[in-house]
Structures are given as C-alpha cells and as structure tokens.
Image (cartoon, rainbow, N blue to C red):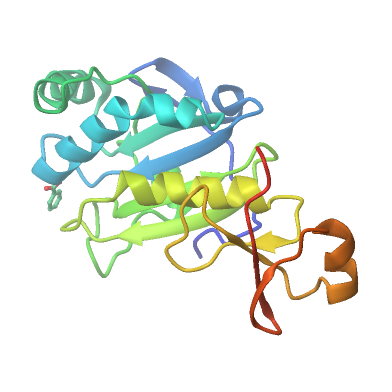
Length: 211
Ligand code: BEZ
C-alpha cells in the first residue's frame, strides 16, 4: 500500500549524486519535495530535472529541499547530469538517488505494476518538517510535471498550516483565501475586523495573511 496523507515519510540511506544520503539528515527541519523519475537518459525526465534545478531558488525561498530518484546507477546519473545541464541550462543542484534495487521506490510506492513493472512512475511527495506526508501527486511517464503547480501546493500548505484557512480552485500566492467553515461568523469577526466577502454562508473570502 502506498503512503497516505499524514503518514510518516520512511527514512532511508542510499547512494546518490551527492554521495551516501540519509533522508532525515538531508531533510533536517525543512520541507522536502521528493520526486521520482522512470529512467535516466529519457526526454521528459531530462526536461523535468533541468527545470527543478533552474528553479531551486524558489524552493529555497520556501524552506524546501529537493530530492530526486531514478532507478539507475550513480555513474549513469553523473553522465546524465551533463545532458540535464546542456538542455536545462543549470547544473544538477540537488541529490538524485540511485535506487537500482528499488528499495526506496518500494517504501514510497513509486512502482505501479500495472503501469510499468520495473520503472518508477512520476510521483511527488510533499513532506513537512515533522516528516509527515502532506501531499502526493502521481503522473504517468508520458506527462511532464508542472513546477508552478508544485510551488503552488507548497504555498497553500505553508499558508494554511496552523491557520483556519483554505485555498480555492486555481489559487495562487497573494490571492484571497477561504475562512474555514469551522470558524463561526462570530469568531471570524474577531479575527477579521475588516470583514470578509461572502459568496455563500459557508464560502467567505479574505485577503491572505501577511507572510
Ligand atoms: C521520458 O522521460 O520521456 C520517459 C521515460 C520513461 C518512459 C517514457 C518516457
């Protein structure tokens, strides 16, 4: 059974492009975006790894570490890293795990046998500083991921953590957010003295809190 929201992300130690890598040590007190790739030297993956490298600064700004996984060797990863830099314009700047025996892929449920019996699917696990799985996305090998969506989910998770707020469809950082239905109008008046916009009694919008 694959990991579910709220589960503790399993720890592991494995070789990567950054040497022997222990997941919990690498994560420290940061958020982690952990993503798997089907195979080295494949076109979609090459574009994805390059895009994550190019946009790493945006993950740093969100106190978030990147970690990738593919089921090939460290030597293959280093060879592929040259292509990733050529195509994406930025050197690989986060660890790419070499999960040749699929040990980590098994722990995280990254192999979906009906899609492919040996290659990992394109999973993304969002893991918070307490090592809890907070979001899981799964894409087929044929569809490259969207980095804006990954950042958008991080923004929503980080904004709503510890607050009685949620984010609506297609929400982006800076846009209005929803007052959780568990907050009564009486309570809301105390929290939002400037009021809110009511679309339905249960759908009340306020500007996002200051960071
Ligand atoms: C790709 O990255 O292009 C890819 C990888 C595995 C299967 C199909 C496509």
